[in-house]
Length: 135
Image (cartoon, rainbow, N blue to C red):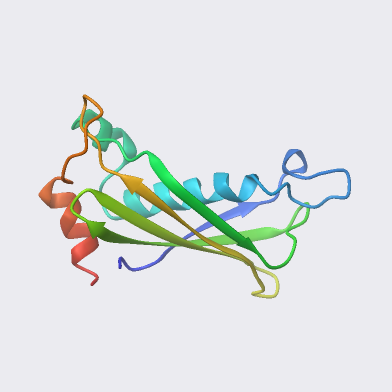
């Protein structure tokens, strides 16, 4: 498992319903923000990955909701990654309200590793090392 990264977002009005509570699907958007930041902090951006001919489509996603995030809350999304197999990666997330450290949601996504033709392939060695170094 990689060392966790932390991404901060402030809940925008457009992310909430009429009651000021965050719409459930936005948590998955925040997972993507955190996953992208985690990879970037480890030296491998999505842009570089795609330029090298790799993609990581989501093949499984889960979010467990504990408390509601609300308009104008500062939210920290913590992300960690692990290599499940040579062709699958799992990221785990914790969504935490900064003001009181309440865990609002936890979740994970599983990603296949695909080449330019859309076929499963192994992560390049430098990317594998990102996940293996922290194990």
